[in-house]
Image (tube, rainbow, N blue to C red):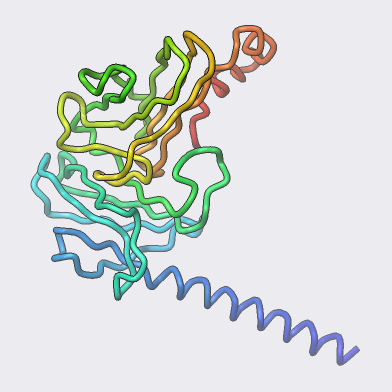
Amino acid sequence: MKSMKRLSLRFSGLLVMAGLLVSTAHAQYFLRGDFNGWGMTPLTDNGNGTFSATVTGGTPGANVEFKIANADWSSAYPGSNVRTVYDASGNLTVNFTPSPAVDGWSPTGARVGYNDPQQFGWDLMGSLNGWTTPIVSLTSLGNGHYGAEFVIPTPGTYYFKFREAGNWNISVGGDFGNSAGDIPFTTTDSFFDVWTELSLDNGSWEIIPVPEPSVLALLATGGTMLLIRRRKQA
């Protein structure tokens, strides 16, 4: 009986130590940007696998760039700086999810997002029309989500990016960075119906096929169809 208690205590101790190691590892990442001379602003543990930090005192509507990195810059997310603007109060809240994602959205690795400053809308740009004009303008879905449906008329592989409505001052590519690579999407069908959604707060995006009408009809109970079409994150 005593040996069982000792084993239990040792196991509990290992769990506590593991928890401390995980907390310490996450605590080594900081918010770094032009607001602090790319120094180290600590992140707050939200207790749900995400971390955040808020910057105050900025100029409302002014550009701001940042990323999440450790002390010696050996790890930094995303690959290029995130760019946005301060909100109407001059604040910026950044959200960091260090664990790889399994929710079907991209990027699938660590994510850096931010609370929607609500200072501009979003366009989807791409090779579908030679990057000339917006393929579609996204609609605000609330809570930092923007989405739209569009049609790809001919089969092929196409490349996309999200950008600030009307100009390239702010954009979102594959890893959510402002200078990130293009987002690829391939279809073998003509007049292919696609849904795209941008989640600013979660630092993620998706470009997915819209289910066929027959599938939607089968699933259209209790709001299920809306969830299939939008796949909005909580």
